[in-house]
Image 1 (cartoon, rainbow, N blue to C red):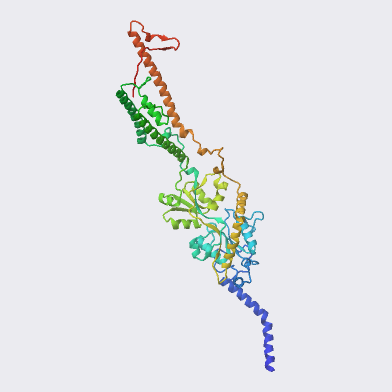
Image 2 (cartoon, rainbow, N blue to C red; image 1 turned 30 degrees about the vertical axis):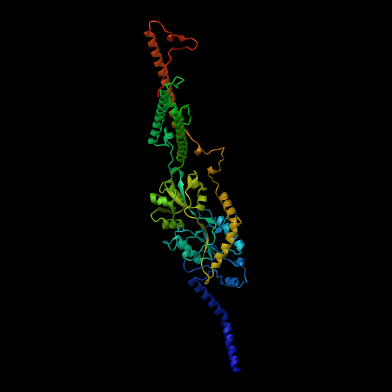
Length: 541
């Protein structure tokens, strides 16, 4: 009995010391959690955790939820329901995706930003909250107070997914990052690599070329065409004379002038046939000439149209990264982004110039420090609507996308320690829902229309009645043929005047030699011209 009373006395003594003992144990656990990386319970949103800090983590233990899921006590869509997840929110002030007020530490009420609207909808569908437990993650070219100044963007991503339950932003899911244990659910942003050039720096022909119509053929071809015309005219006349001599008859029923057959041959070369063949040899020759003319005219027309259209197109330094590497073209990209890593892994000899920030990159392009810019497709949607970057609408996407990829949230692959892999699986499920039902696309277009008022005309939307100026032919393109035709008209007038003067002079000389005025020198009052009684039949070449 005495032993029992002693035990009760010792129990009372321990009970009296319990409150102070429990307080000591709780403080010891909190101190240990801070030193070993336990969950922080003292921070409030935004979580002011220095980037690359290794002694703090905000990850939530989800292993009990994973156990309930395995046993069937919890539906997959309800795995995150009711939880308060800690989110590492990627924030870049210049892109407008997140409208965060750094003074108040909160988002704008009316327009929080495209990413915030997507994240809010994701939290609503999955049933978790995040507004009171998020941390701001700044890109390396923005955060100059990083604990690891030599870190890369991939290092920042790995630290973020190890510190928070997941990170939300335009994270590009590359193979190298997946090897580091980072999970990339379905993305909401197009991060495909594209090339941007400045229209003002592209080569474009604007000078006057009077003989541009001769471009379809080179000089030897034009020489062969002229030689063919002459030879065909001579051959036709030769065949005609041979047959006339053989038949002892003259098929020239009308007066001919010198070179008439060569003229007919030249007209046939343009597609207008004036020959009237009589013999079989003449018919064969004319048929061959017409077929030759068909080929020449059609080829000339096609090549001329192609040449004029090609003159309208701008010539950029390069239309692909492979061509840029081969030609030594300088390519600019934002420093620290995954684009630079992807480019250099595939094109190690490329001349890549990295700049700190989006605006700096396009300043380099504008001032000629680089020839083209490697950019993400979604980011260029913002750039071309930004009046400070593209106020003159000179930025243009050239070539095709170098790769096809999407950007979005990311989390750590963890199936046993904190069981954080559940977060990535649930986000994957609901992000696909939001993409399939059109929520992401509608929200993105609303963001573009509300955040950016500047727009450039889209030439592809113009109607056929209102032709684009670049598709119209100007005097710069066709002035040469008009000039040539005008010169030919002047020459024809001069030759006609000279021929008339020579003819009149010869007639006056013949009339002055005769003592009596012959009938050929009598002027016909009705026509006003000198009528000769002589009939001269000449069949020249």
